[in-house]
Image 1 (tube, rainbow, N blue to C red):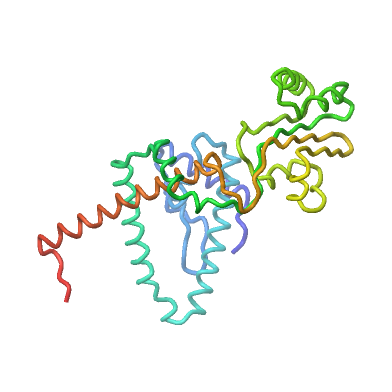
Image 2: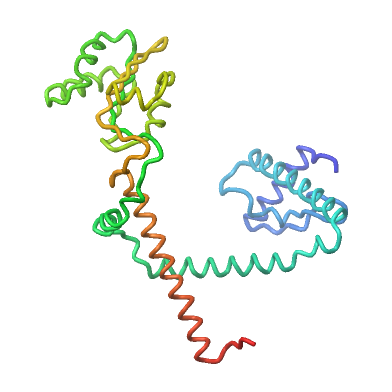
Length: 284
């Protein structure tokens, strides 16, 4: 197939825009042909965002036509090279259609009936009952992270207070950090993966991370332009029990999915029992 000419595309776009505006036009104008299959103007009426310019419409149309041609060519090649058994996809299509309809109905049923709020009490109870199953597979920390320009006149002062927990020093650090630091983050005082924190540093901690963190509660690094300061306020290692705060969102997701599955099971059982009572199916 020859590539569509820019001006022909513009003409097609004009036709399409007039059709979308209610003008009478022939939407069966062919845009492309691959062997005996055609792509018509009517097939592409819904691909353009509202208010788009003719030049942008042309770009979208050109890309769509090119993709359509490629798809038809690979489809033609597949049909020529697969035998009849391989090309018989009726069962797969029916299975997919059935699964999709069931999924859509169940999702709509759940959306209309399920309470989506998982209470703090439910989460706490689940954690207490399953604490042995919450074992860390990585190091997590509560930390303070600073990225400060090397030339900052307040660098030494920040170094002197960033590891302190006194209220006065914390206030001083916040005042200085918000003025001069490129990055200042205490991660909402939440547990985070140390691997995530380490990505914010210019290079990795040398040697064993666990050994380092058991010896030291601070990390200081620098590159050409910045000094990086990290104060590890708390640390848990792989194999330790994962804290509730770190698992809260995961537990909430588990309880939500359990509630959802329970509702779906109840729906399926009710439909099954109703059909059995009405003699709507027979098992031979």
